Image (tube, rainbow over all chains, first blue to last red):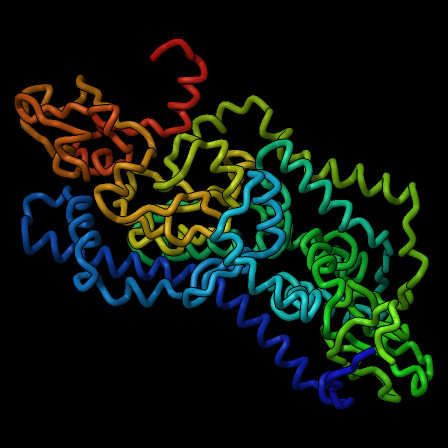
Length: 339
Length: 217
């Protein structure tokens, strides 16, 4: 195996890295909430300006708000408010986002769109570039470093360990791991047959994005006089249901056994370059890493924990002899390439 | 009760496991199309919203749209909002425009940001506007002030394609030209009559009407 870079033990799994990981996910979650609020704030500013335009030019025709808005917004770039440009530099959610002109789309969203419409568009490929390359390098890192739903499920994990410390009974149901791949394929096929993307309806990051956008719209309509029309969304109960299930029924029930998006990330990151590896000479087989792994994997294997490892790096810190390390290098090939 | 997870026990692929998972997955994903097939009259009513400009035929739009909500975020006058589950799961999270509350000003910002080209990219110009097909404005002459002899003409002044999509007759009576009307809804928003005399028929409804009467031109 061509090992290029190995993290010094104790660094990658340190509390600093774990703190950074939680911070990134919290920032993503707050960012999604912020984008919705900023979008509505932008409207508020625009409507205030239109009010001024109306009162200056023709006060008698107050009903012509559409005309005034049209004049205001379809004029040359210089006439538009600065906030129009600067307040929409970050938009969308983890399902599909645009950050300072960088388009990012979830591979599951792209896969569904391609399966249902049977065509690949250019903007889809642009949006796919970054997540696919990052997944090829880092594997299923999205689940533990970015996914805002994963952040909430981690809170459920904490609740679970708290309950156990208090002596409350919690069950740990084990399902078959292949469920998520079957669900992924069935979902894509059903979507292609029906002509509507179906997996996005119950993929937690997408559900969370929709729910937050509806809630921010409702929140803003309460704050200001301007009525905001929003759809009725009950998907939040779905997220709460998963959190309850993960607290009482099984640790990381959704991520481990059901999530079709996680399955797709696992498949893309099959030959990833960054892996947790175990030095068998130092390993004492104490199973500490197995206990700590949120995905229920076995990092003690000589090769790597398998394609479902989400690179949360919790196992690195738990290892008493320090035999686990994060290594960057080409995957071990069955051919005899290295002399 | 012990937290120690079983490792190898649950990883093997067996026929029973595969079938169980297959049936579960099929059930979970078929919930959506089955609900869609239920004859809910409320669903039909709630679908009477406009899609953003650049949207293709409804079935094509639904195929492409991944319900990310970027169009709603970027819309400078926030006319776009997202469906909840009230109009069926197939519409969940997809964009809609309520013309009466806030009509589309055809700035085409949403068409530029769509990550899957469910909204075709259009330029904010007259040419770009002419490519839009959101619906069709219909004037109810018995409600319209101008047709009752009280000169109004507000809808004509709101129209982004005046002289093409809408022309004025005697006493500023509006006449919609169906071949040029793009259904943006600015006239519906501007109409000072309540209930409004001019309404937009969404493209979906036009498609359904055309499907019901294929022989009518």
